[in-house]
Length: 245
Length: 249
Image (cartoon, rainbow over all chains, first blue to last red; front, side):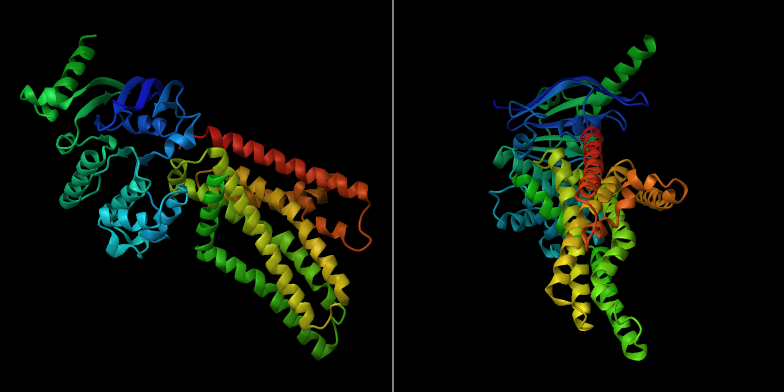
């Protein structure tokens, strides 16, 4: 299996004492890795470190076998991401938003913009200003921008946040299709475990900045547990262990 | 180089689509044009101001480099840095295949292009106004004004880079702009209390172009003041870049 992402002993501590410590995991081609944890567990911090938005205090991030900070342009050309929130340029149309993003990829044909707009169902709104979009439509536009360069790794932070049921199902189906048909690896953070269970094949649980568990979903389901039950079980175990200490 | 050009084009496009940019550019053309019209009316009705037509490009340059352009530059620097950080759209570029050093350089290049476009617009409008007044004394005054406008770029980019340095420290656009205006006004008033501030304060060089026209200043003074402006620009650029590279988003 080709190593897509390798995170080793990554730590980051903020002034308020929060952050992540000694986090390590890896992703291979075809993996759909769910990163779960309560709000404030450090999911977004970890994704920001992987994408270079935040520098870690220590530890290394390798993308496609190369050190990400040193080979940033080369590795990020193969990554698509939506971090923290679906931010777009409100004063530009959906098409113009994607046109700006497309300039970073010299070999990308202009027709790719229409293609991704079609994939996320925004073709009828392509000439409308993004400022008038609902949260769900902005989420779709951000997803289209991430998909634009035909990435081999997609990093999505809470991708179904703010979406209605139909939107959630659409996003799930899009991710499943891209992972299945194109072999794109996904790293998805979420606190909506039940929703993600239908999507991921691997998962990690992040709590208070530490990656307390990581496993394959298949083994878990064969034990008759749902991901949600397993998650709650693990959290309870940790709580009890902490209370005992 | 490719990613630098790509983001420079993006920054230019983002600036251009904003109403404020178009409004400022319109103002830049209208002020010299209206001034020429006012002078023409004054000449026709009273005969006063007959000698001012040929000086219009330099008068306008003085007005713009002292007042309008620094203000436009501050607002644009805030838009390029603080505005994008607070709107969380800077992230959209930071996760693309481009290094932070190139993002920073492309934004500064966009600011430089903004200055060049405004100076060119003021020059074109004022020269056209002078022609309207029929007060251009041959090609000599046009060449003189071209030199003055070209050299005016140097203090403007220095002020622009200082504005970038301040903008990078803020998360609120209003706060950044407020501090910039305060510093600019204070720096302009400072030489009245401490005359020596006129030598070392970068804000005292907004009329630097006047040294280059007519008999002008000695080469030694020109070189000396040029290096003061370049030093300020280099310090502001490297300081801002260093902080931009280290910042968490």
